[in-house]
Image (cartoon, rainbow, N blue to C red; front, top):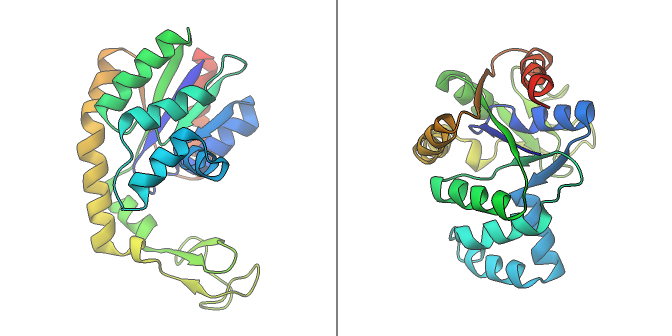
Length: 213
C-alpha cells in the first residue's frame, strides 16, 4: 500500500515522514533521493535526469515516473514524499499503481497558513559545514552565527529569503490545487491541520493511518 504525503515548503513534511517511518515501519521514497541514487549509479534514467538538471530545467514527468516505478514494491507500505507534484504526475502514478497491482492508501495533506509558512522558512538558518538546521525563534544557536554541533558558520540561505519563498509557495499552490482536487474526487484525500507541536500534528496523522492501515 502506498501513501502520499503533501505539504507546502515549511509544512513539516520531512518531520512527519520520519515519524511515520518510526511508528509504522513504512518505507520512504523521496524523488530527491531517487535522483541522487540514479545519477550516482549512472543509470539510463539518471543520465536523462542529469541532462535536464544541469541546465536548471525540470526533469520530464516520464523520467520521474520511471524512477518511481523502479523503486515501488508490494513488500511493505511506503510513503511517497515530493511526488507527485503535478496533475499529469498524479495520473501517471495512478497508471503505475494499476500496472503493479498496488493500492493507494490515501493522500495526507498538511495544511499550514501562509503566514506560518513564511515565518518558518524565513527564520530558518543552516550550518554551511554540517547542514544542521536552526530557526531564529524555535531553535536558535547558542552563539549567534555559530553551529552548536560543529562550530561551523550558520547562514541564511538565498532560497530562504522572503521573495524567493513567496515564489516557491505560489508555484506549489498552482501545481497542487488541481492535484488535490483529483485526489478529493477519488475520495482518498485527508487534510490535516499542520499547526502545532510536531507531536500534536503527528497524532492527527497517526489517527488517519490507524483507521486506514
